[in-house]
Length: 306
Image (cartoon, rainbow, N blue to C red):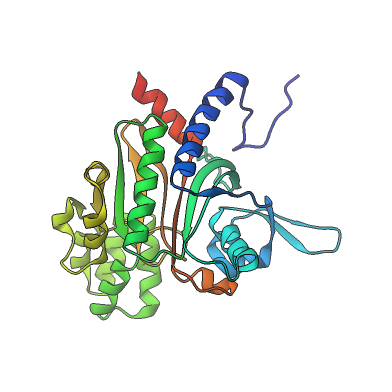
């Protein structure tokens, strides 16, 4: 008899689990070396906590009621729970604060897209270190973690979540139209983006959205150039600038990044700066962080080894 499990979930059997633990143990070693203390938070949060951090983070979460009628949700990432921890447990602690985690996050899935509901994430949050030095540290730890996991051919796409918004403003695009444009950009829907930009007379920005390459494509004076200058040579050679890169979550405020590997067809993870998020929980601090999908990293490593 076959007993089904929910779509987007799976059983992990001993051989694979052993391999996943090799990767997570290697990443833990990196986190320890860079002095990122590991934290664990509840899988369940109050809905109001995630909504306070970002409405998009709360929207796809799974909801349930506790015995008192409170609405609980399964966390969709670890950034907002750690922001809560900083505000409530480290209210006056000196900065910077460095946290790491290896934990599951839960996302809603679209039918027939083979998306996972349950994602094993490994990541860091660097709190109280302003950019660009803080961003450079986050990217450096990211590359060290990927190296430790055994990946050889990965690249880190580096963009700026604020860049396109500033360009739209300088082009006089009404604020009401910017949301639809940024939504198409985040979805990498270039057809939809061209339609939206053409509708507001800013079609020339399509070239910016498509721009990828070395540091020479980054306009002078942009913070991304300062970040790049702070990277060591072995980390800098992993970076590809992507001026159309934005993240779907609304709390990112500056440089953002995603990890690509030719051995795997989708990003392995990503992150960026979120300098306004901590303030929503009562302690305003600049911050940056990232998360990797451990199972995607594992799949990429296996494919690279073939």
